[in-house]
Length: 97
Image (cartoon, rainbow, N blue to C red; front, side, top):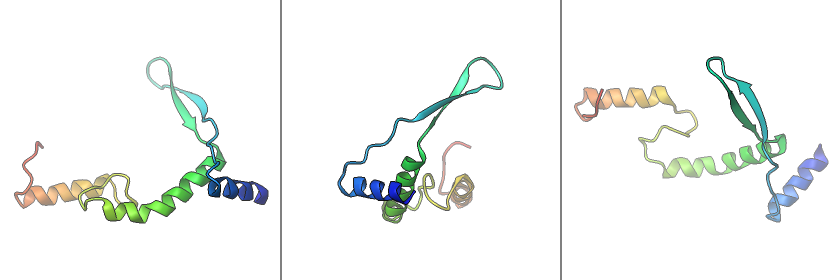
């Protein structure tokens, strides 16, 4: 496994890394016909995805508006709803409810 990470590290440094094809797997739908297709990255690619996320997340958080809740670590739907409720109660939000 260490050899795999050494190779991966070398590929990334030399800008030679290429992701593997996604593994496609059909999951039957519980209602109706057909299947939902999952596209699953390899473990190697997940390691790279996580490393990139860890490297850029702090910088991206500084760029995002304080009112952006999607794709931010530690923030989610409940936080966005809470903030909208605060704005509505303060008379600052006039959107549709």
